[in-house]
Length: 249
Image (cartoon, rainbow, N blue to C red; front, side, top):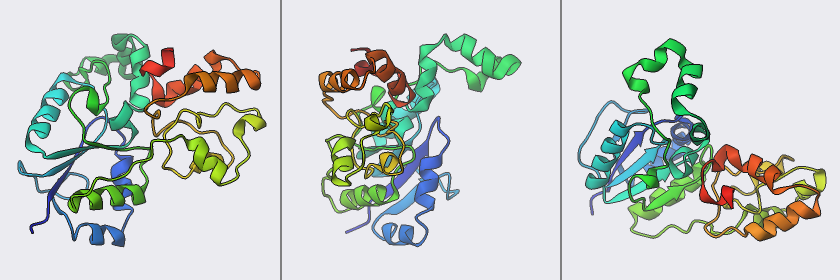
């Protein structure tokens, strides 16, 4: 059986998630033994119009990018959104809270009129095309990436956690960040990171995106218990949850 052809594409992002793949070092050789990389700007010069699995990093900010993304979807059997920018819009989506033209002028000044900065609202990949799988995080977890690609190469359906980070925190017997006077997004955020941030004594930033059916009312009860407000919670959610529907409920 021939190996599935893998292509990795990037849009608006820091490309840190692709660097995580490169940081796999020797392990990446094992992974590439079961897939055939045909395009990956970060690591190879070859390009191809023929691929089975398309991995997309970055958020979508320009109409031309939307057209390119749709062409990729037409060719790919499977599309995987890679990292927070692709899965939920990431930090880039904060821009949607402001007048875009004013924001561009403030950041780029005279250069804001250059054609390549002709941006619109920031979108996650699945706001433009259908996405089959998501690899969450900012940056992604290398082991999770390897696991999902292996599953796809073998024709298996990868299991991605659907429960909250709080579950992983309790398993590690971490002291709740709310007990430390902080606002943590663990109750709303998808697990799979091993509660990485709370385990080093900082709050969950929500980079893996919200779980599919977050218990907003329970989260509000937690806020009330610790003397916080819903507005405090929304401020925290803005970093990786900007302009997602739950932030306004």
